Image (cartoon, rainbow, N blue to C red; front, side):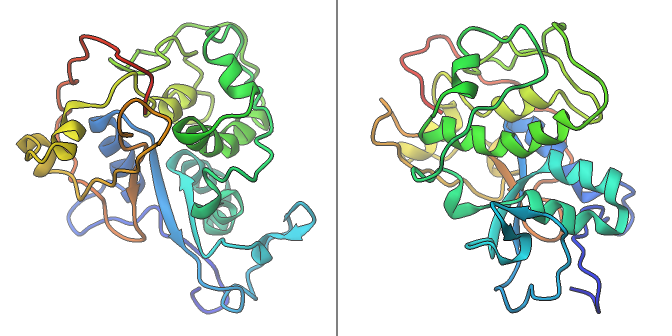
Length: 266
């Protein structure tokens, strides 16, 4: 809160660099082939008492939602908010942010997601339309507000060309639907789901130091085990805080080899 105005400085720039924090975050996520997200620290309900958002969530005013003090939101949602909302971008992004505690909550309804893009892969469509758990649920919940924004854009999306696949991604055959986003949104949001754990994450799990292209440019790795998966889960997000870029803007690292797929983990 700045005076009476609520904002999030997604377009923050460091001195001597014309690139915004948001553009750096998306580029950083491209290095590791994961979706980009922010974690927003929004205070308690008393702090948010003067926040004006005319929308609600299941009849609860936006600012009065439970557990939203620490929330996460896709960088694509932030990008859309900056493009449409200007000085209101922070409030718009807050409305679409998800409490971190709720991202993979088993208590939610997990309503179907129906993308505008047609011709979805036969393995992908059931994930979007049917309840999920674990890493697939995380990806689906972060995709949900992005898809809602896409559904509100004017252009339709019929059967279209495929996005460039990410080696090892669980869903490689994904429509190349951009519309007003800077990247193909389905490919971006789902590429963190992998057919196997990336080598640099396996290094962490087995006590080895990851290679320099990881350690020199990554702030940290959080590993959350999934009891039902055949091996430990890999990171689902490249996340940023409230100021400054997570990673420097560096050349794209080579994609990691995936010679076999022993199971479906993410």
